[in-house]
Image 1 (cartoon, rainbow, N blue to C red):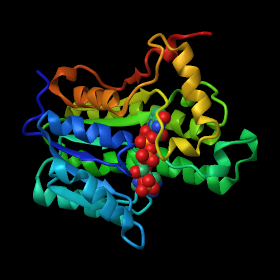
Image 2 (cartoon, rainbow, N blue to C red; image 1 turned 30 degrees about the horizontal axis):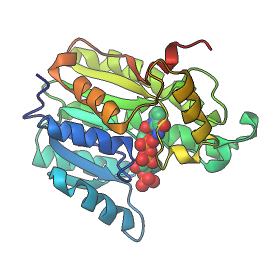
Image 3 (cartoon, helix red, strand yellow; image 1 turned 90 degrees about the vertical axis):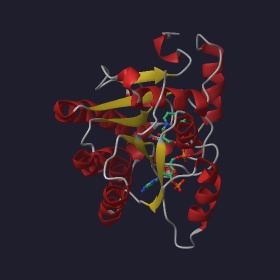
Image 4 (spheres, rainbow, N blue to C red; image 1 turned 90 degrees about the horizontal axis):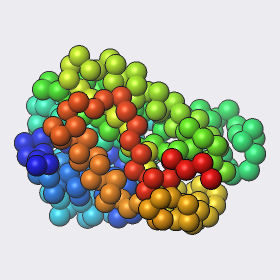
Length: 258
Ligand code: NDP
């Protein structure tokens, strides 16, 4: 029943085969979506090569550099979508960044610059990408972002990223309200902890995973594939009545008090 045939989906945030965005891209492809992939460019072009090789089996019809701190690259990405596809149906926002220093130690020790950078890359970017996507979602659409429980509760070391996720989750609600009349749905997936490049920067991530494995109702954490399945569901017509929500894909951890 989950069929994304004929839908054009842009996936951001693939760094390697551990990335949550990679799990999402695979499930969208399996469901029949036509994929576009963006990568964070670096001077030597190493990321471009690595991500290009990884996604090649999914045959993306667009492969573009997009640093969300670079407005010109955002514009160029969506201009390429307009030219090649004419229409966008699904946007996967699966990226975040905070300096290593702001992901451990005292919460109050974060510098103004590190705080602003984390909010800009991890939360403001959902607004800028959605704004660029809006005129291309002419037949409705689905925007999905990735968040974490640390945006709602205090999680050791998550610190500045918790503030960024709180802002991101409120962005989901305001964007859902603005884009709803255009039949564009906006939702967040709050995933359980998964070992990735980004999460390895959070102090004590392995302890967090072990804690979840002990306490969560399913006695384990989740996989990129499980998050990918939920993203594919949210992109599909099966989720046509769902917008402005944060869905927990965390093996049930969020419900536990102790
Ligand atoms: P990854 O490191 O695999 O993905 C993070 C992505 O963000 C990378 O592709 C990174 O690019 C990209 N990125 C960083 N800065 C920018 C920028 N300026 N412009 C464009 N892209 C940028 O980690 P995850 O898969 O874990 O992270 C994906 C999302 O999932 C994040 O929002 C994260 O907070 C969220 N999440 C993760 C959880 C986890 O436990 N792993 C749990 C819940 C939510 P590059 O690597 O090339 O620098």
